[in-house]
Length: 179
Image (cartoon, rainbow, N blue to C red; front, side):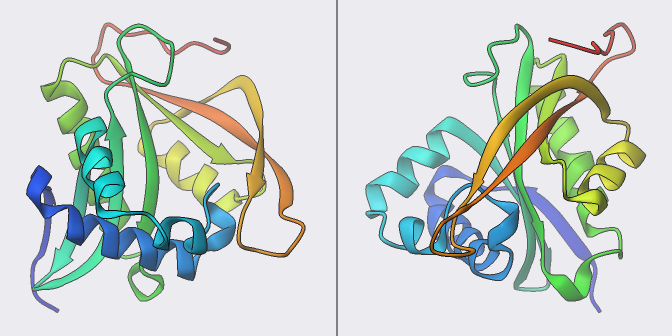
């Protein structure tokens, strides 16, 4: 295994983001609110617009993309100074090897660089592995929950619930228990 590289994509690298996002949706449909079929049908312009809205971070081993995460800069949280971490995925053979942690470290650095004070991460309440990982990184649960419709799992689309977790990006930021 060569050295894992974690980097932020430039806007013109949208095809790389599209490719890994579609891999993630195909491999782990239960982890996302979108489906492979929906996003595979997107025009190129949609992928280009997505690059404008959020920072996309890849983990690479040589020339192979092995993980992805995105950092939104606060347009969806409604919480002043907060950005949103979303779309975290690591290919199955690399899970548990530190790739997700490296992606999270870079996401936190990106958040600090753009002036965010905290990151919000919505995690499926039935995804114990993701909740445990986020907690080990320093994310703390809040009392906030929202329904989550899982697409691409079965014809009826499963219903689930997400838990809001928050990660402070500076020593002075308090972690709320409810927002």
